[in-house]
Image (cartoon, rainbow, N blue to C red; front, side, top):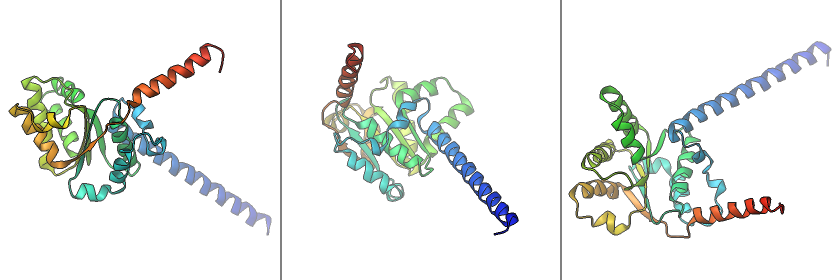
Length: 233
């Protein structure tokens, strides 16, 4: 091969490599933007992915299948209600779904109703409407710790407005809650009941009832730190 041809091929290969690097950086930037919008300031949720499943939460299989069949779930406006005691993996499961969909450039918003109410209290006019439209218009809305927000009449009105508008939009929701199934289905309060009815109509209940994963993780972290402090690491 002549020297000129060899140099030309080397330059061509370098150009392809540079284009590939640029493409990867652009993809990483876009994914980062999607994650920022999905989780806000909760960057720890970026680490909640299905490949970190240790097998301790069998209900995670439901979450995995939900993500795998996302197009069907979206078409049928089908969500999930992840309910059970605190620390049993509900938030992790919901965040795993969010991250799996973000990888496919699906618009997701994951927040708590407490955070939503704080934002709404601080906004008015067009800014308030824009924030609500973002929550209503994203392809998947995840509400974490549902039922833990303040239960004032004004708060319940705002929660109902969001849930009802999302319901009418025909877009799915995933809800996690520490409320029991009885509290969700038999509450005597009209305001709460009409909120819960909207959720239960569109979200399949999945019960999380295993060991408290947070306590187990905290105990393991303390054990490792104790080893380091004792010089046994």
